[in-house]
Image (cartoon, rainbow over all chains, first blue to last red):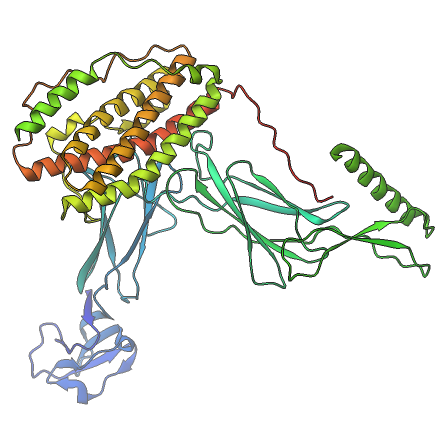
Length: 335
Length: 219
């Protein structure tokens, strides 16, 4: 009958061949290869300063008959280091989840035990099927002044270790990043990008627990981000994009009043609308107008307006005319 | 010892007087705007309280000013109105009940805070406390304004029976400090809760005045 034997890395291991006497003649085998006599002390197998490579199946056979007298599985490992525990509420006010991991492997099986204490009450943290090493709790009460204490204990055959977290209900609120971030150019607006997104689907009640958002954007060629904080709405139009430059855009979310900002959303790329390039040789007269720019060391942006007098081709003229009409319409609205 | 008991008695007596009627000014604004103002006030107070609580807990000294301090809740702390509420119950509160709970809680919390004010030696801390109490009074009045503009009757006074004199006297200095600790904690939690309460109310009562947002165009 086989059994499993757990030993620490660096330990000295002595294996006895079952009930055989010390002076019996035996042969030991490990993972299909003979073990030579230098490791034997009588019929005992001595493994000094074991390492991970020595894990495996060990067999002991009686000398002449080759009867299998003993077999064992050796697993070399280490006791667990202090685990890393994290708790977070991404679905406030429904509850929170905790997830954990070991900072380094133990090479042998570990069991995790988690306890959650709220004041005098012990709560049950239901283990998730996936991902493993995660459990969730539903809040029974809201707006509690009493802290939650979460203790995680990890145990294996060679030892145990534990860690604890103590926190207020509000301190661990951190939504998931916004979803479905979309950035689109705005036709006939070379300096605009329209960004829209959705509340993270894990946030259960945005009506009563509204989120606010933080948008950051920069052209790929620059390192410095520009930021906009938005207290409501799930869209925003960037109006100071540099013409023709590809932008990278991200959004983060936070409960309006409590907790911390989410991680940044997946980045989206977009380039503002640019005029169609002209293929024909006749030059189109382009009027350049300089609009005011806020930073003095950046090149002034230019807005190209199609001169409606240019006759290049019917398609190009149509574009020019449309641009002109749109501009005229805007002008009328905002004078 | 004794002074706390006397104070508690006075507090109970004063707090059971009829509530001050809402200022005329708030009745002219739509209910929606009042709710927004009240919401903004809770955020302002919450911000103020962070500094005030830090200073006050330092004044109390360790272990009260330690971030991990997590004492068990003693029965005597039950006097301070608690923001803690069952989730479904909180969701199902009527607008009236929601507002009334806030009104009662802050009226009582204000009373207790004024008590702190009288006992603190440090001038700087007294100033801060005094300023905070004024702002908190503003919040109580603001809530009263919302209630009256929605046609709800103001609660007669803080909920609960008046405290019998002497019963609330802390038997020793440490327990007195515990009282102060829990008072500040509940106040902080109430301010967080109120932000959520007023968010819910905002959604249900449309603002009377629509603000036009003029966006500057790049032309």
